Amino acid sequence: MLKSLLKSQKILILQEKYLRARWSLAQPSKRIALLFAIVIALEFSTPSEYLFGYLYTGPILLANSRLSRWGKLHITLVAVTLTLLNLFVPPGETIALATFANRAIAIMALGVTGYLSDRNQQYEEAIAVAKAQLQSQQQLASIREDFVSTLSHDLKTPMLGAIETIKAFKSAKFGDVTPSQQKVLETMARSHKMSLQLVETLLDVYRNDTEGLKLQLSPVNLVALAEEVIATLLDLSAARRVYINMSYGESDFRRSLWINGDAVQLQRVFVNLLTNGINHSPRGGKVEIVMEFYSSYQVVKVIDSGLGITAEELPHLFERFYQGNGDRQAKGSGLGLYLSRQIIDAHGGIIWAENKLPHGALFGFRLPAISEK
Image (cartoon, rainbow, N blue to C red; front, top):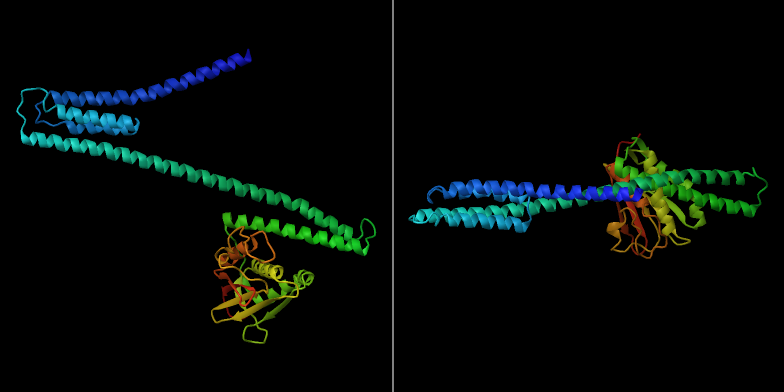
């Protein structure tokens, strides 16, 4: 019984839609016919030298947004035929050359009106389709970014919980831990921290793209910042047996490089570039940080001893999720360099990469300088 009622209801809905469609098609047809009747009455009730054929543009324009292309062509041909027919109906009139010329001009005008109206409708339809596609792409991008942001945020909680649990095991809160177990726990903790860092980077990238990067500006010494980051990466460099060295360009003396920036964000740039250099250097290799001072800007260069970068990769290194197809050993998430570019751009600086002959790669950035503090 319920199925039959639902079926009957669907049939009624379809019938209603069909009648509405018929009504929507019938309404413009009636208006077009009425306009034709008015113009025909004016045309054929007056001498042929009185020209009312221009009024056929009304039905043609009305047909433009209501009928198909074939229907519009049909309406235009009918209007042209009626305009010509008025030269001979009513019969017995003498046709002057000026009258014929006026009719010919009117026919041309009707043809141009029909063509331009059809062309205008095609443009409108193409614009509507393009707008719909753009809106669909924007909605898809928004949904994707919301999904990634939500997923990344939800992943942080279990990772933090796992890190704290590992810390508890390492501190022997659940019993004695042997040296071999300590090594395993340290490896697990390091892996979870790297995963957490990746999730946080992903969150920051999407947040910066959607909301913009908000900086907490203050005087920052890039040399001191680099030394702090080097200290935090000693375990990683030792594990990969990569030596980190810092120099000052042509000078052998330590000096300060002051800029007005966000220390936390710039620290992330140092971490990303140094980690990238360590991971791409061979065992026993070297990563060098070169700090260069100029009157109006400060330059930092991170040079690794890896295999270098191919010419095809260079233009794409700072794109989001780009990992490259070259021979460099490590493959990352493709977000570290992109985030670094976001941060340097927000500071009004420039970041770049180049090959360092005969081997290795150079990643550098330049920031506006301020006077020493």
